[in-house]
Amino acid sequence: MLDAGPDLRQQALRHRLNRLDAILFTHNHVDHTFGLDEVRRFNITMDAPIDLYAEAPTMAHLKRVYAHIFDRASNVQDSFVATIIAHELKADRELVLWGMRFTPIRLLHGRLPVLGYRIEPEAADSPMGNDPDGWWPLAYCTDVSAIPPESWAKLTGLQTLVLDALRRRKHPTHFTLGQAVGVAHEVEAARTYFVHMAHDLPHEPTSADLPPTMTLAHDGLSLGGLPLDGQQHEG
Image (cartoon, rainbow, N blue to C red; front, side, top):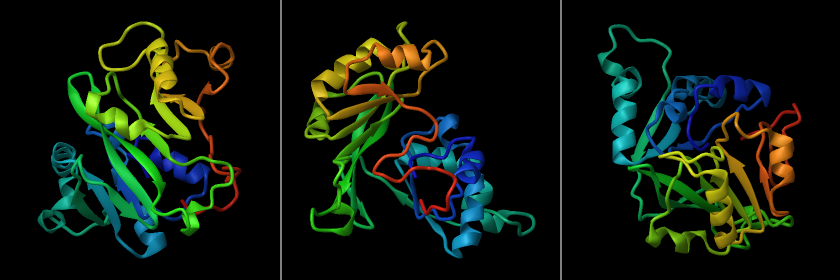
C-alpha cells in the first residue's frame, strides 16, 4: 500500500481487503499518514506484523504521532494497537518486495522533498511479470510541484504514470493540470492517470478535453485486470 490516508478504513471495507503486507510512505503530511491506526485490523486477519517503509523525516513524524504504536511498552496499559516493523527508506536505494521492485523517485512538494515510486516486476520471468495488458513499469507521483533533474531518468520507459494535477490555477505545492499534461507529454507513458484533483476539475468534461492517453483517475479505479467489484480480493 502507498501511504495510509484518513479514509483507509472506509476504502478497505468497501473493497473487502483482508491482507496488507507492507506500507510505503511518500511523505509526512496528515492526508497521507492519518490512517495508520486502522492497519491493526489487518494484523488480526493475517496474524502477522506489517512492514512499514519511510524516509527519516516521515518516520520521525509517524513515531511522534503514533507513539502508542512505536513505543508500545510505554503505554499505561496494553491495548489493541497496530503491530508494524519499521524500515527506514533511502531515496537512492531500490526495494524488492514479493517479486516487485520499488524504486524511490525524489520529487518536490513545494519546498518539501517527497518520494514517488517506480514499480515493476523484479524479473520478466517472475509470476508478477505476467503483464499482458502492459501496466508495468508504473510510476506513482502524487503531491508534486517539481521534478529534480536527476529524477527524470526514473520516469523513462513507463507504461503507466500516476501524476498530481490539482487544478487549473497555479498552486505553490502541486502541479496545475496544464503543468501535469506537460510532464506527461515529456514522460510519454502509454497511459497517464491524474490524481489529487480539487473540486475545480469536474471529472467528465475535464477528461474529455485531455489528450487520448491521459485521463482523470477516480475512486475504485483498478489496473491490471483486477476490478474492485465488491468481490473478495487480497491487496
